[in-house]
Image 1 (cartoon, rainbow, N blue to C red):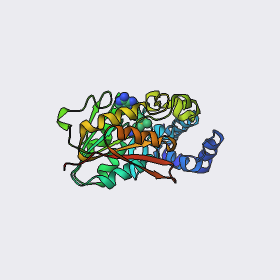
Image 2: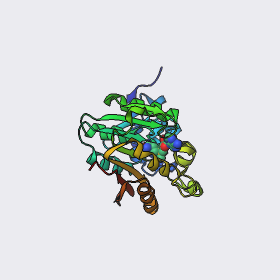
Image 3: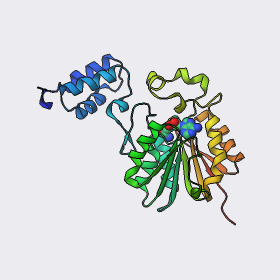
Image 4: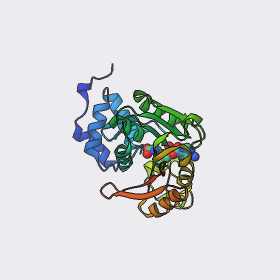
Length: 266
Ligand SMILES: C[S@@+](CC[C@H](N)C(=O)[O-])C[C@H]1O[C@@H](n2cnc3c(N)ncnc32)[C@H](O)[C@@H]1O
């Protein structure tokens, strides 16, 4: 017979095991794993996966993002805290009822957060990874979001052209030569296509910028998360696409976002 939840070990004991395995936030993680465990056998399985180096969010099946619990399955990029800044900038620009598109959406965390904050949005998202699309569909179903699978904007419906008010993208932007510097959790458990931005990190961003004018409504906004030292080149790519670009940064979260605006009519 499975031992009951009341037989779960003390949080301090779980934290000690996690700390010994190198988990920096062992107490917080112990609390989350204890909350998720149905019984001691289940807890042991969760702790074993974490101790083996899986990202906490993959073990739990969700990531916290701007107050939401966003589903994140194995093989899907874990939404980062710094990307909350991208979502906040999008929230500031999206009016009620606006059309929102998230490209390279991963689990769709940014779109879900914007849709939770701004009423009546029409939400679209796309990603090349089938696992990411499955997660995004789950996360965006409550707001009626449509999620498309394919390369960048190729799978989007033609009827969306020229209608998007806010286009947000956290595309991969790690330079290929720096992939080896990422923590093992990212290197070993997130797909390379979610991380590798090519020689200078900007290959996918440049394609996003070039595609944006096809989808944006007049006066619409493109928001691209980027690295602090890449921001000038990201902004240049956005301007080459015919948008006016500004750089916004949040030093506390180490977040940088380039905001491009398509000229309006008249
Ligand atoms: C850095 S992850 C970010 C995911 C999500 N935006 C987030 O912040 O959690 C980049 C995402 O871009 C997707 N991606 C990479 N290249 C792509 C392409 N050519 N077309 C569509 N999606 C792509 C990856 O599958 C991955 O989900």
